[in-house]
Length: 380
Length: 140
Ligand SMILES: [Zn+2]
Image (cartoon, rainbow over all chains, first blue to last red; front, side, top):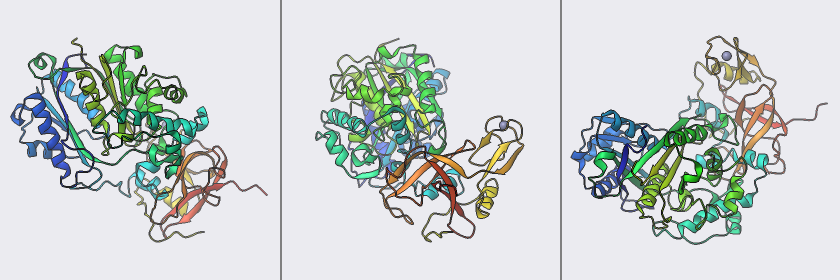
């Protein structure tokens, strides 16, 4: 895409986050959308493009009263919203639509009005993974970690440190689910879920949603919000079966998506002020830091251990507290994008002073897919 | 051959994967090899994922490999008694597959990465015999 040609002019999460037992999933999409409308000073009739995942784009558009000229139902897991941003930017530049609404809503905890999520018995996953007793992400997403630990000598204490540092960020965020400080010992003494992963190395399961509104950079000047410009994007997929990942030490989808985004943006790693890496589990930031090129192979754990990503560090990472402490509805990518927008607007609870360039990097499925969005508050 | 509890999840073979499951019923671990480029791959499909060739052949793999990575699940699961391993093995022929490591303690000490493993079959039903792996028995 053309850097700085499209901007985010509306961004909001659901009114509540956490446990929302009286709201069905579709209404979480709409609550977030209405909050984003209020943020941007728009209403449904101003929207002519709709992108969503988790619910059908038809349902979201109809329910909100939108008649779109462009829809995108790309659904590749929790990073789908990064891909929506990328696709929306291209659509706006191509003149397919002017103002795009991207929504997420998920009743991950309360399971209200939510369709069942199960891989059918005849799929490859249903034949060659599910029969081995896998029980969702905690027993799948975690599988590569022991190989990484052997390859690079990663210690359990270092894995625990990822969660400890993110809790430090969460402590600064009133909307975070978990805010009490934790120690490495707390993490290593928490309940074993799937060796080597303990409870505090695994993400939350909560309810919530979020929405974004995008339009051309030209039109963005007329909105009440500070525009956040899209400067680079990437996407890729590798495999729906984690057992078939090419290399358990690195994600191909991360590398392809990240390289594409950096190339589009024409920036270097030193230019990045703020970073969000989708952290469904504690090893995700390690893979993200290395696969995006912020750290050499095997160096991410010591980078975090030395507090480079902690409050006061040179590369603030997952400043909302992340999926480990802030919230995780199931498709967390939207919340990573929301935090990047807040940081660039200067409205984040744990604000990074003077942040100009932020990256929101997402994963979908179990290392199945990836989307990367590089944002700035500087006009092109 | 051990029989599994009836509560276990049951995979459903497709026309493309049926020869694999026919193989496990016969006590064989079958893989596919491309007739053009010799690439060996898994899971089954009627074409080569490397060169896109449509002429591929089934063959019996050695059933031997090594432990690539794993977790030990402590979560409740119908038909399983936690803690149990969910593992990925690298077959000697190249492809990797998910499995359980059985016939050994489900502990980090007993489950060392890169240790040699060999296939065994668990009878889930008359139709489905599930390949699992155990530490390679010292050869006689
Ligand atoms: Zn071939």
